Amino acid sequence: KFLNVDINCIFNAACPGCARQEGHIYRNFNTPNGEYMSISTWKKIILPLKNQLNNIVLCGNYGEPGASPNLPELIDWTANTCPNLSKIQFDSNVGVSNTKFWKKLGKLSNDYKHIIKLHASIDGLEDTNHIYRRFVKWNKVVENLFFLKTYI
Image 1: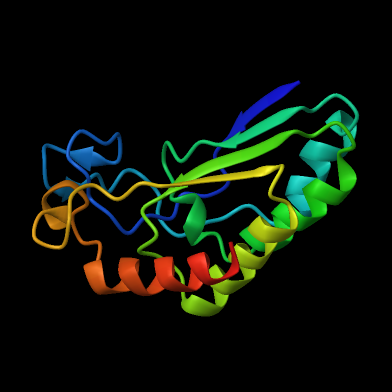
Image 2: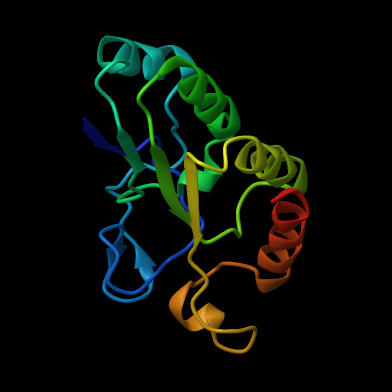
């Protein structure tokens, strides 16, 4: 009934204490960066479970869910395939991808309000966000939030 899965190992932030870090600032280069789950692999995982799944969490232990370029398609397909699904949840620093991606995700969030639960994980404000979400560009966070909010 509950699936907790990381759909990528793409990340833009270097957050202190994260499993992807060595110490407080340096990326652990033993951790891959740049791969994301294909839609065909996602379907292979979901199809056998489609009638049992109630909740899906895109956990982001090693990847930033918002960095998967196919995330809107994964969500749309899943919402239309799993009849008992009540929640697809993920956190994002919202400082990844582009405005086209966030517009598409925002529209899906509006279409599937009862299912999609996006937590924008924004630590601090413009003058402090870089301390907690290292290498995340504040202007990009604000721009993406604007486009996301436009559709929700």
